[in-house]
Image (cartoon, rainbow, N blue to C red; front, side, top):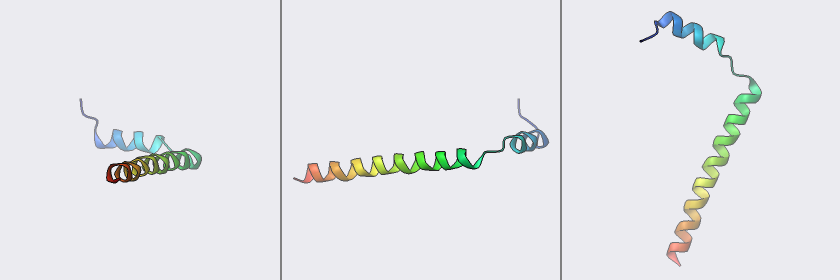
Length: 49
């Protein structure tokens, strides 16, 4: 059921994330955060007026 620590370390070492994949993931997080915070700001402005 549970992997040993040695097996988990081998799995983690075998999964090397490329620089491009990391940049795409960071860009998606930034875009998602901007959409969420932008929506909150717009919602507060519309609720206040």
